[in-house]
Amino acid sequence: MRHNVFENTRPNPTRLCAEAPARARKVLPKENAMLVLTRRLGESVVIDGGIQVTVVAVQGDKVRLGIVAPPSVRVDRKEVHDRRAEFDAGPVMVAMEVRP
Image (cartoon, rainbow, N blue to C red; front, side):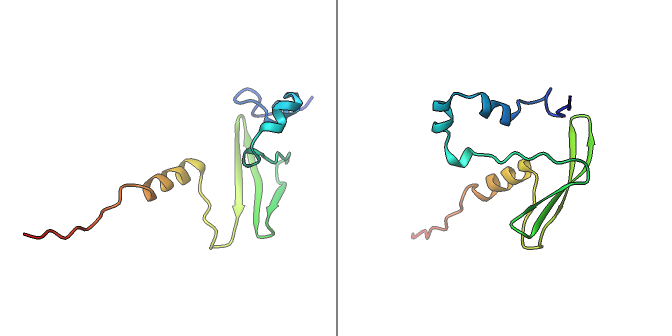
C-alpha cells in the first residue's frame, strides 16, 4: 500500500471529490476545481510549456519543489503572494488641495 505523505495532515482532495454525492459535485464552482497529479521524486510537471515544477525532495510531511520559470513570471509561496496582494491593496493616499 502506498503512503500518502499528506494523509495525516490534510484531507485528500481526490478522495473527497470521489466520495462526494453527484449533486454536490455539480454545485462546486469551476474556479475551485483542482488538477491533482501524482509525481515521484525527480519527476516533473510542465505548465503552459514554459514553467517546470520538479519534486526535488520528500521528507516526512514536507515536499520540496524546484521551479524553473521565465524571468517575467513571478513565483511566490502562497503566504507571500497573499501578503503582497494585501500590501498592494492597502490604503490609498489622496492629495487634496486646501484653500484658505
